[in-house]
Each structure stands twice: as C-alpha cells, then as structure tokens.
Image 1 (cartoon, helix red, strand yellow):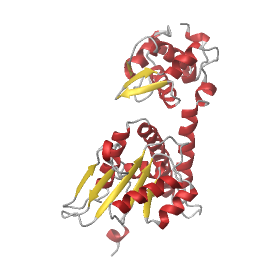
Image 2 (image 1 turned 120 degrees about the vertical axis):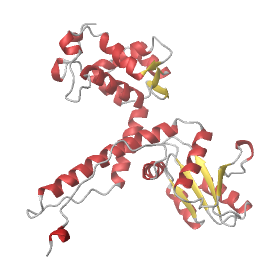
Image 3 (image 1 turned 90 degrees about the vertical axis):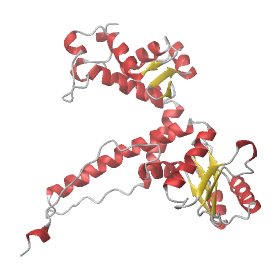
Image 4 (image 1 turned 45 degrees about the vertical axis):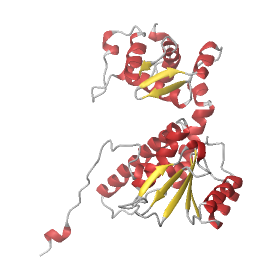
Length: 314
C-alpha cells in the first residue's frame, strides 16, 4: 500500500485513523493477533522508506507502530476489535460488517459506535465526580507548587482513563468472574477482618445472594453481596433493591452491599437508603479497585520533595 495515499500527520506518517481500515483488514485475515505482531504487520504493509519505517520517538519507540497501536486501542474501545486475552485481539462481527460496508472507516465512524460513546460517557461522569485540584492563583505561591499540582492533575486524568477502560473490561467479563471480583474487592477493603471468611455462592442456588463475607471467625457479623454486571444503559431499578432486601430478610441479615457495573435509579437509591443497603455503581467500583489495587498494578511512582524548614531553624 502506498502510504502517501493516506491522510498524513506529523513526521509525514499516516495518522492513526488513516491506519484503522488496514488494521481491520489484516485482523480479518487471522483468527487472532498478538497486538505487537499486528502493529508490525500493518506498518510493514505501508511500503514506507527506511527512514520513516524506523523513525522513533526520543524514548526509542517506533512512531508508525505506535500509531497503529492507537488505532488498535480505539477500534477495541469501539467494539470493532475484541481483546480475547492478554495482548491478543480478534475482529468482531461489527468489525467485519463495517469492513464489508461502504462507509469510510475513519475517526468519526469509529467514535460514533455505541461502545465508544459509552466509554466517553463513563469518562465524563468520572471526571464530574472528581473535584478539580486547587491550583494556587496568587503571585506569592512558588512555581514548584503549581508544577506539583499540574503533575497531580495529569496523574488523575491518566488514572481516570485506566479506570474507564477497566470498567468496560469488567462489563465484558463473565457473571461468575464479576461475582468473584466484588468479593475480592471487599476483602481487600478489609471487610473480612483478620479471622473472617469470604466466598461466592453457587450460581444455581444463590437465593438472591452472590457473595458472603463473615467478618469474624464465628460468623456473628456477616455482609451479604449482590452483584449485577450490566451495561451502562441498563440502570438498576427499585424492584432489584426490593428483591435483594427480601434475600437479606430470609437470611436474617441487617447489612448488604449491592454492586453493579451500571448505575442506580433515583427510586432505587432512595429504597436502598431506607433498607440500609450500601450501593456501589460502576464508577465507584473502579475507583475502589484502583484505590485497593484490585485488577490493576502500579505502573510508576513519583516522589516530590520540599524543603524541611524545621531542619534549618536555629
């Protein structure tokens, strides 16, 4: 393929969305691709001159392969590709349909897909819930303080993206995986206590209870869990809360946690408050997963220093 026929961006290389049709075309030729192999295969298809094919960023990352990676990422968010396991992708039915269609597979079409739009709504809702950091606005504040706030804001934005991607990954998981996940999260949060126990109930006979956490060795204090793995548009309504309360009553329980990957209606929230049921929606779920390191790992840490004024006092 003559790369010069594509939309070109910085460095005279094709933009990520110009590469999307080729990504989908090659993805359709194999049952699965390792992400790095797909990046290289697409880049090799472009007939780039050697200086452009091997052009790198200052960190030595290959630029054209990086742009293919961005295309793979957005195509996955839009549901045209599916991440089937760590590092491996395959084309979806939607991807095949769009590949066979007449529409131009560009940034606009990719970003109009329902899954991508859902991802953006999740991200916007997450950003709304975060209070913006107080950036000093007086001339007396030192520049390093502003720089520290800028760095903190960048970290917050990055983590919001990770949490949003995490939520989509959970929505695509199996129901039993989700039930195990929420129990692991509550254990990581300390609900089990030092001598307690926690387990997921059997799917065939859970009686409306998905998980149980005994907070002490004798089981005198127990938390019951309901987990609903829903798409963002499938809001949990009041009848689901009533049903969970019935299950709690049958178990003579006085506390329960209802966790979903979507959200709760106003009536559901009011009912849960009256029943002393704690609600955790998809946004809060992934915030807690980041906070307690469940399903994620620390990528990088930074240490910021300031002068210890007490050290220099007489």
